[in-house]
Amino acid sequence: MRMEDSELLERIGIAIKALRTKKGLTQQALSELCKVDRGFISSVERGTRNVSILTLCLMINNLGEDFVSFIKAMDDIQ
Image (cartoon, rainbow, N blue to C red; front, top):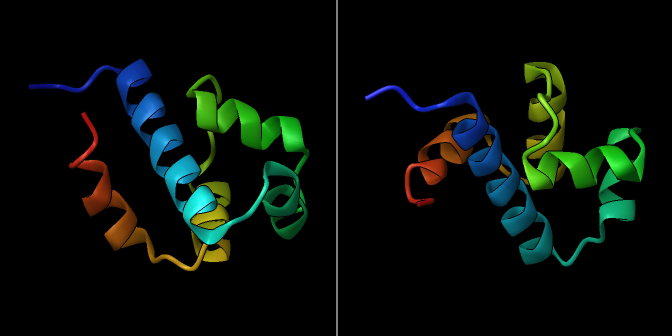
């Protein structure tokens, strides 16, 4: 079954937000680490932004996670 684009973006956002809150970071703090606007982080977390793979990897790395583990964790998100 093919996942819809909007569902994939939503899962990415949920996973990023979960990692960020687990680390105790605000959206502002993560945005500063990644050198992006806080609104960018917010739109990723809401699943309304189609983030590039490079920026996604930057976010994941700044949250202390590796890409493969992040993708595997997304399978648990319903």
